[in-house]
Image (cartoon, rainbow, N blue to C red; front, side):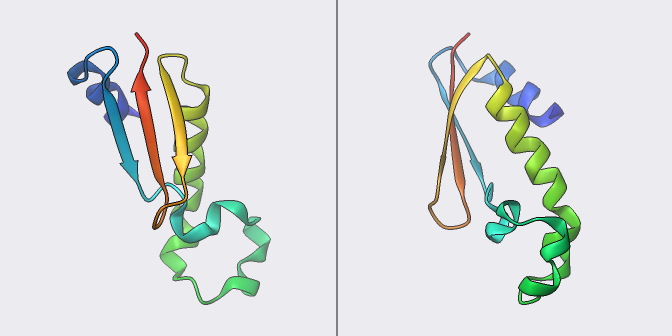
Length: 83
């Protein structure tokens, strides 16, 4: 989340921020105990998915931005700075 705060200092009001890989191979849609069903995904995906989920939740609840998660590639979140 510190990265986002630094980016906000650099982006003007109305500016666009893009975050890549916010769907994390689709793992954010599965429950943690579904790991065995989706064993084709690398272990590193499951090990780090909670960070991606927390980051996505942070962006969704941040009143300084308007955001949209696009299902392009591995997920792309576009944010527009409101203030």
